[in-house]
Length: 505
Figure 1 (cartoon, rainbow, N blue to C red):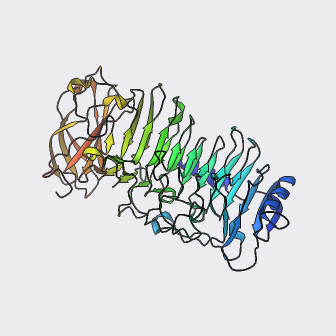
Figure 2 (cartoon, rainbow, N blue to C red):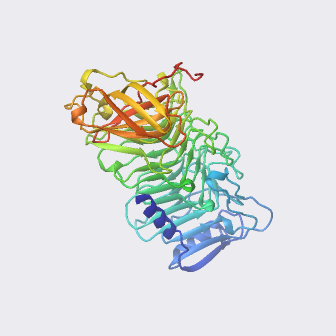
């Protein structure tokens, strides 16, 4: 229900506001009559919600080379590159391929200042659409103080060249978008709202406010098939959530909300520098492809080999400074809520701080073929699989929850009979434990099959159950996870009935 409500809110927000005036950019000059700079000055001086359109003569793309910072935006403004002759919004949905937009307005900087920004906490809705932008500290920046203002980015190519085929030449763009404290809507469920944010030297998106990130290509080219890494040589993450905030959504349960976050130099998503419990309230990371191309069928990994030849980077990394119990829910059991996290050069999901106060609840995700040490797909300790301990007395991220030991399994039709045991004393975790079973995808999880509840009365004992699995599912080999009542998940169990522990069984 939360996701549907959020989608409705986004739809309402993108309705065209009542316009007070339209200002037209008629040349590529840095300043003066007909320039973008002058149009912003005029819009700031006018009352109401205004628009900037483009009508530059000649064949595009047209490049506006800026030598200094543009004026900050002080009233609601839509800067619409699709008004330029020859510009065409993307028409491909997320499940149809990459982006086919034709963009005709390109803004470039020297690398030493920001693109568009507002420093007004209230009464400014800044919308940027249909633009190519690169060569800035950040292309789009929100206000540093929370209020009613918003920033929105729809249909842009940030940090790439005009056709989205390569990283932009010239000075690097450090970060694609910095929300600061201003709520942001980056992409959306409409094909025309999808952004390409690739080739930034640091993060594509730095989130410090309640924000929605939906339908974008992040780290790929415009086709969604080849890598244009963000954060190459950085550990910041393509999407960095770096402040104590609530209500952040990345993706959603509808395929139109899917982000493809692949080909990046570090992790796809990093939660870091956090100090309180609030950052995971309302967090939604659902329906994304992380480590694959747009189709989900071809590897396009995040991460890179570090100098010691260990694999660095990967899917999702939690590393906060908070000392209050807090759990990030990743994925979901409803239709479309699972993330696909596969083929990354590092771990799939990791709680890297190893603090007992930090953890994640992995729900229904397809996580396989990630190449961290020991092929770790879920990691709650040092990099690599964590062995069970007697009674689960150890402490650390996710309580170092022991994984279920699958003792026997058989399938007849759509019925899976499993005998398993979890060696976790009732003093070592909050009962009951949620036990999730997944089809094994040769090195991790595949299709979520079914769920069982392991009660206090079952603690540390073998339990046999028969579960209904999705029709036609091949349930064996299978793996499982245990999640306590506080939402702290184990790593995957070893696969039951796997002939070879490599990718060739």
